[in-house]
Length: 302
Length: 293
Image (cartoon, rainbow over all chains, first blue to last red; front, side, top):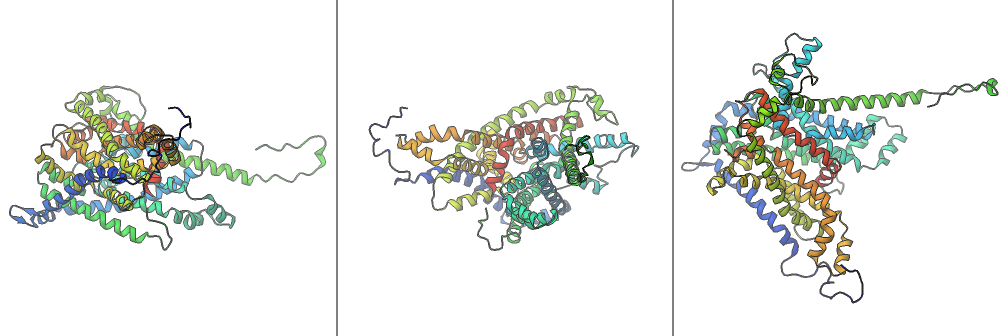
C-alpha cells in the first residue's frame, strides 16, 4: 500500500469509528457467542433441571428421594465438603508463601516459576495417576521408606480399610495439582501492588509478619477473592483424582453423577446430583462475595 | 564481600574499627534459606512428574520389583509401547488431538469477535454480557454434561467428535472471550484509526493492523483452549462410547487395567502440560492475572 498523502481519502471512508449503522457492530460480533452459550449452557441447564423433576407421569421428587436414599450420596457430600475444607486453606497458605518466595527474587526464579506452574495444565485424572505411582502398595513412597529403612514392608496407603490415609492421599494430590492456579492469581495480584506501601511499612519498622498481615494481604484481597471462588467451585468438581487413586472407595459428588449417568444409566438421578453440586457452588460463591466484599472503596468487583 | 586485610606498612599503627559483618551474614543466611525453601517446593512440585516419567519408562519387570529404585537404572519403552498399542488408545489419542484442534478453532471463531467487541466498543449491556460470561464459569461441567448427553442422543450427535468439540468449545468460550478482549485492548487503537484514515476499511484495518499485533496473545489463548480440551475428562466420558478421547479412555478403563497401563496413561496425559507451560510461561500471569480481575 502506498503511503502518499496526496488526494485526501474519500469522505465515506474517513468516517469516524462510531458511524451510525443499521445493525450495531458490537451486537453482530457478540451474537454468535451469545447464541452458542445459550444453546450449550442455557438449554442443557434448563433441561437438566426439568429432567431431575421428571418422572414417568409428570412432576415428581422421586429422583431426589432415590438420590438421598443412597448412603453413598451422603458419603460423597461429606467427602466433597471435607476435601474442600481441608485442601483450600492449605492451598492458599502454600500459594501465598510460594508467591512471597518468588517475590524475594531468588536466583533461578524463572525455573522455579516454571516447575511450580506445571500442575496448572495437569488434569485431575492425570494428577491422580501420578500420585497413584507414588502411593500404590509397591509404589515409590513405600520404596523410599524401605530404602531409608524406616519400615520393613511399607504401608497400604490406598487400602479402603484405612480411610484416613485414603483421604490424605487425595488431599496431597489435590494440593499438588491445584495450588498452581492460586499461585498464578496471587503472583499476578502481587505484581500490581505498588512497592511503596511495603517500603513505607518497613521504614516505620513493621516486622515481616505485620507487613504481610496489614499491607500485602489486604491489598491482595481482590485476587484472593477471585481465586477463592474459582478454586472452591473447581474443588467441588474434583472426582477423577479420587477415582484414579482409590477407585470407588472415596466417593465424591461429581463421581457419583458420573456413576449414575454412565454406569447406572439413570440421567434423572444424575441430574439431581449435578444440581446439588451447582447449588453448593452458588451458595459458596454468594457467601464469599458477601464475606470478602470490599468495605466501601469504589473498586468494582471484577 | 572483601575481607579487609590489615595493611602492613603505613596503617599498621592505625586502629581500624572492627568491620561489622553481621548484616552481611544475615543477608547470606536469608539468601540460603530462600534457596532452600524454593528447592523444597520445587521438589514437591517436580518430583512426582519425574516419578511418573520413570514409571512410564520402566520395563514391566522393574515395575513389579520392590523396593523400586528412584533412579532411572533401566530405561525401557516396554510399558509405554504396551500402552500405545492397547486397543482404543491410539484412536483415542487421535480423537483428543482432533477435538482439541477443532475446539480451539471453534472457540476462536466465535470468541474472538466477541472479545474484539468488548475491547473496542462501548455499548449498553457490555458489563452484563461480561458478567454473564464470568458466571458460566461457575457452572460445574457436570451440570451440563448429563443433560447434553440426552440432547445429543436425540439429535443423533451422541458419541461423535462434534459433540465433544461443541461442549469443549462452550467450556473454553468465556476464557477465550476474556483473553482475546485483553489482547485486543493492548493493541493501540490509534494504529487502527490511522489505518482507516489512510483508506483502509474497518475490516482491512482489522486484518492488516490488529491481527498481526494480536497474534501472539491469540496463540496463547488457542494453546490454553487446546489444553483445556485435552484435560477435560467428565464431559468427554459422558458424551462418548466408542469415540473416546484419551482421558476418557484412560478413565473408563481404570478399573480393569494393570498398573503399568495407568502409569503410562498418566505420563501421556502429563506430557503436554510440560510443553504447554513451557510455551506459555510469559503469558500465564497476564492471562490469569488481568482477565480475572
